[in-house]
Length: 250
Ligand code: 13P
Image (cartoon, rainbow, N blue to C red):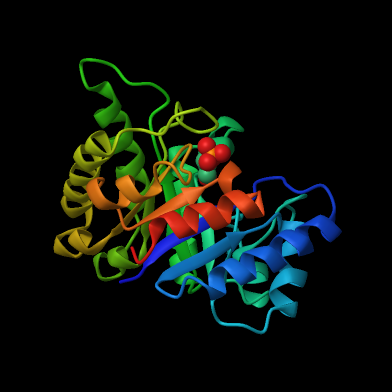
């Protein structure tokens, strides 16, 4: 399985012109990093056009969010069928910034199941808002995982990618230590196996939260993760190139 690096552009850049420029640079980076699977998650408004114009095979695309309903009266929503129709393969579910805007654990469960049913790969995001000495963050993440996998057929569990993003590290100066990530990765796998059975062992786990060129290689080597979900460092072509270079042949 290849290392996967997801470029989450969030609500950036401000113009499509800039988005196209960033995508052109990302394409060059992807061409020089054959052992890494690069996924770009642009704003929904840019996604279809960027995807439509891309003839290569080195980059895949992800939607940043989706509705679980098939269609209907959901002003502002983007459906999984519309994402599929744009030839996009992945969809982020339960990103911390969506949860902060009101998405519940129950919503994420519906979205993960609906994404699988639609033939998309859900990148299911979990992560505690704060850490405590008594380990409550493990219970917090466990609740998120149980809800997200609640309606996943055991045979499909290994298709879900889990992105662990501790909320306190997102947008901060420092990523979590690889040692703490390693501990959390074991916990995530154990919990998914509890919910879905043995196929849960195969779930691919990513880390996100201040990931950049200074910490990416250590995280992949010692954090028990198969990839990264990158915000700021993916929105600047120079930084993203440095991050991918730092991974070498990860
Ligand atoms: P930063 O890499 O900017 O901390 O953002 C992480 C994130 O939320 C990616 O989804």
